[in-house]
Image 1 (tube, rainbow, N blue to C red):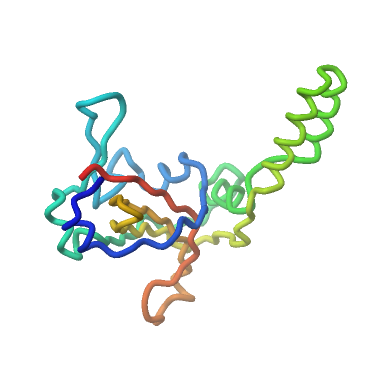
Image 2 (image 1 turned 60 degrees about the vertical axis):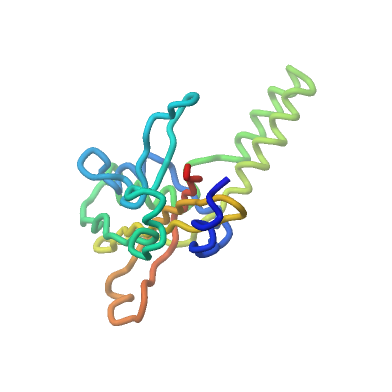
Length: 194
């Protein structure tokens, strides 16, 4: 549970959008080998138990300053290039819902169901439902588009939460527009240890 004084100073966060793309694309965008993945938070090994703890980069007391609760940075411009092995092609494949074949999975699951009776049918129903529920973002990246990261620290219930959002921005359409315009392609939430 976070300190009440800190919670009182933070803005309430919007609900989770549910937008997700695979982690390897986020790593490709942030080029995490050469720069920090996040500006507002840092991780450390937990002293009590396994895993990592996440905390504000400048300490919990710094959250009263707006500059320590919001950040925006351009990650990369998508280069022109050919072939199916480019980052642009991989990103567009995921934006269209990834490579899954729910109907083929259903047929194969039904076949397995005939062999293993009930377990195969349960697998078929669950895997088909999951594959068909994948959302299509209905947006495609083009050469020259930009990928931006927007970070925010706020409150959600009685917790302090970091939201890392990734946007696809067409610099020509958003030119001259007031504010920040882009398509949300990924959102990641992390509860902070305060």
